Length: 156
Image (cartoon, rainbow, N blue to C red; front, side, top):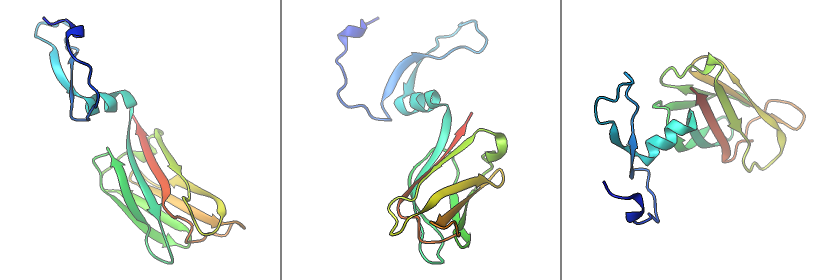
């Protein structure tokens, strides 16, 4: 077996790079060789404790919001709809169990041309989250999402 200090230090790490580790034998006997390769991305995901969907959201006029997806670790496709002035839904193509008490949404307006009250979110069902945007007087209003940060985290 090689000594760990005999290996050179990596200067760049990729999500596809592998780490050597020991996978716990579920029987507890360790009768087989439990040494395996693990991708860096799988180790990061396991340690994070949640899956996430992250996007930049924009909306104008009576149009549906548009999402520039940054990261999606949920295995789902998301659809955005405008359901009324200042009211939008994001729907998951699979049941992510948003109502399970382990879902958090982070949201801001980004860089809108006018200010409004803080955007709000609520869980509508296992697959739908509703977002509302309001002008500075509290009236539901469009045109406030301009590359706004949006993230759904579903904790395990």
